[in-house]
Picture 1: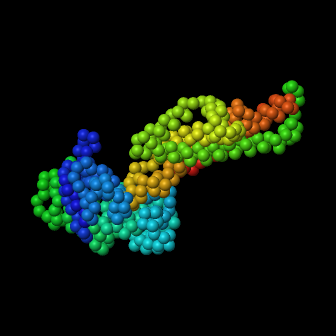
Picture 2 (picture 1 turned 60 degrees about the vertical axis):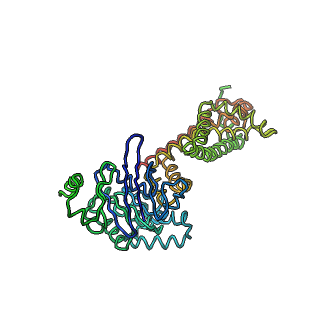
Picture 3 (picture 1 turned 45 degrees about the vertical axis):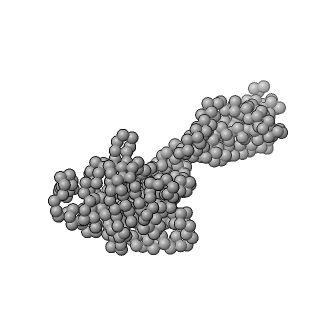
Amino acid sequence: MIELKDVSKWYDDFQVLDNCSTQVAKGDVVVVCGPSGSGKSTLIKCVNGLEPFQKGEIFVDGTSVGDKDTDLPKLRSHIGMVFQNFELFPHISVIENIKLAQLKVLGRSDQESQQNAMRLLERVGLVDQADKHPAQLSGGQQQRVAIARALAMDPIAMLFDEPTSALDPEMINEVLDVMVELAGDGMTMMVVTHEMGFARRVADRVIFMDEGRIEEDCSKDEFFTSERGERAQIFLSKILQH
Amino acid sequence: MFGEFDTGVISDNLHFLIEGMQTTLVLTVIAICGGLVLGTLLALARLAPFKPLSFIAGTYVNFFRSMPLILVIFWFYFLVPHIVGRPVGGFYSVLVAFVMFEAAYYCEIMRAGIQSVRKGQIYAGQALGLTYAQNMRYVVLPQAFRNMVPILMTQAIILFQDTSLVYVVGVKDFLVSADLVANRENRILEMFTTVALVYFVICLSGSLLVKRLQRKFAQ
């Protein structure tokens, strides 16, 4: 479904991604973790072409992301993405946030978009917030709306870029619950997160990144039970300490 | 000449003065709308990834921002009839001059507005599959516009005052109408005091409105 081959990226002279290769099979949940600045957010933004990369290839469902002839907006409309800071559009209501791309990108009718949006709001438990503006919602609620907005496009895969990092602790679970349910439904997911509990519960594979390189790429059981590389050990001991 | 302060001259010529104020307001409103539309297009061009487009827009803006407004008004007054091949009258020539001059200023305001929208918002629009144009239309510009409302209104107040410069080509705006009355009736003190008061009240009200809006937006 998603395949990365030797992807490298530079900001001027500074290399942020160094020959990253991995793949995400259909229905798999892959968790990407690593210290801040390790390139994990940049990597996931390369998958749908939000960040350009200079070397290597990325294929999503057979389409080359780096190919300049690729219709990127069309490709992106099939890949859902959820951001650290939610990025709901602040000038329109919750329901309009979920309808916008259905109307303008997929060309769905107003009625169909509306029904679809309400169905998804029900799924994330926020039907009664439909007509509010994003700023009136809590962080956890905003992130659940953002997930509903991405799902409204009927994506073939979902990318999550630190979806719970900007949330107050008591709101993290309401978002993770939605993601766990999504994983249970068989959604293909690539998730940048430090939530190791989430990884243990639903991940098929865990990728550990450091200094722009993929240092570990193995099954969940291997990652959490067997001997890992030194950097991954240090990282895990730091975030699992408490 | 500066005998008794005679307010009768105002009521006697009220209709004529109101007509002048209408011209001033029509000029202001059309210049704002036209300038805003053209300025927004210029801002989009300035920020476009296509370099020649951005260069042309940049040159336009720098050119008009380096010219005194009064010169631009003169210039269009004599130039526009040449281009269209027939006399167009003072009003239409100053209208073109104001729209094109204001567009340069509105361009810079809108450019700052567009750049004030967070990068994450642009990412979010892109990730949903919106094209560059759709992202601008539905995500970036509405937010840019809202962020810039107080500055756009301040510019509109300046524009309202600047329209009085049409004096130099004899378009009958509020100031010119008052000037005509003043000379005809020999009531210069009364007329110019009235003109000053009217401009003061309108501009002060506008400024107070901007302050209220700023407080509202700051919340």
